[in-house]
Amino acid sequence: MPLFFELAYFVMEKREDSCVCLRVFLARLFAYLIHSIKFKPLRKSGVFLRLKGGIRLLDKEYMKLALQLAKSVKGQTTPNPPVGAVVVKDGAIIGFGAHLKSGEEHAEVIALQMAGEKAHDATIFVTLEPCSHDGKTAPCADLIIKKGIKRVVIACTDYHEKVAGSGIMKLTKAGIDVEVGLLHKEALQLYDVFFHYIKNKLPYVTVKSAVSLDGKIATAKGDSKWITNKTARTDVHHYRHCHDAILVGINTVLNDNPRLTTRIQNGKNPVRIILDTHLRTPLHANVVTDKQAETWIFVGERVSAERKEPFKNNQFVRIFTVESEKIDIKNVLRIVALEGITSVFVEGGATVNDAFLQKNLMNQFIMYIAPIIIGGKNAKTSFAGEGFQKLTEALEFQIKQVEKMDDNLKIVAVRKG
Ligand SMILES: NC(=O)c1ccc[n+]([C@@H]2O[C@H](COP(=O)([O-])OP(=O)(O)OC[C@H]3O[C@@H](n4cnc5c(N)ncnc54)[C@H](OP(=O)(O)O)[C@@H]3O)[C@@H](O)[C@H]2O)c1
Ligand SMILES: [Zn+2]
Image 1 (cartoon, helix red, strand yellow):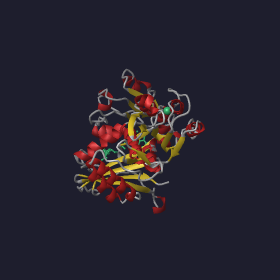
Image 2: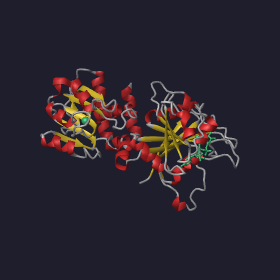
Image 3: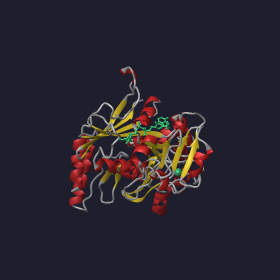
Image 4: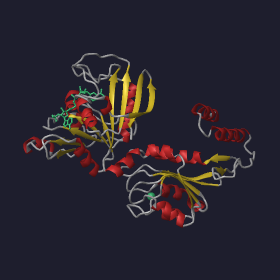
């Protein structure tokens, strides 16, 4: 049955390689029906790998698996990137793995450990260029060479200054057949956060907003629980899980007393960042008392030591004093980046969202739309403030995803350029 879904997928997606995929599908269908059947190679290029039963699978399928492994750990490897690896020999998967946590083994190490002696002459599919430098762990490129791997297929090169091509060079010099770029687009999407972080030394910023059909984020009186449906709200929790930090303005803390935690099974709680110039965060606020995650409160330089004192004994709360009266969000992003935060999920409200808009510090915008109309000229929209005066000044985005979430709609847009 899954094979038929696969076929439907190829047809519906109108993939460039649908003809090839269809042939592979038919080959797999035959193999599925008559297990022992042997096929001649569909193509003698490296695109297909020999399977024990005689059928060939696309390299793509193995890379897809490696990407899936990497996706499954997105958000838990900070400040490292999520990486997946699959080791294949004679058409059989003999090892796979993902880098689970910073400081722990890289994906290649786990996959090669699982493959053991069989790794000799095998192919390894890895989502990111293997590392070549001594870090917290030994270089993966060295291990690949030592294990006698014959071919390395890489989805994308690593922009990290310590790697940036040197892993590929090392492998090539050792006489290994290296191919780069398989499912490159998908891999780039996976590494949007990591590459942005290492290139700009700033976290990747996603601003999220939940709005009514008329674009309101709350009623004129500030009532905002709940505009969107449960499916949309659960989706937000998945984003929280994948981000290193959530950021809100003090008004949201005062109005909603949010917990800002991840409430899905095995969810990871991000650091909670509050912009609060005058340290108005109440001592009884959920983000202060619940001990579920760290809360970092950014305050202005005028906040007195006495005001900060009651927070001092709370090991979950850190107060960052910025050396100006107003809190500059770029400065906040720089500081949290130094603390190892690679991604920030901004959950508003309108004033804070607007600060990100005005400073052009938004990499992605996610909007959930509920089929209600709130109305009211004083009811807030996603971005407070004056906005841009000319259309030519408006920030341009590219729609990446549109998804129906029961009766709600989700739009994901990424910043152009
Ligand atoms: N539907 C949704 O998706 C959603 C999401 C979140 C919130 N909300 C709603 O939005 C409302 C709150 O929005 P809001 O616009 O009133 O306030 P807000 O964005 O939550 O907080 C704004 C406050 O943050 C502080 N701040 C410190 N530094 C800042 C900076 N650089 N840029 C911007 N703000 C900074 C300022 O207070 P100080 O000067 O005191 O520091 C500012 O007034 C609530 O009613 C909440 O329910 C809706
Ligand atoms: Zn490595």
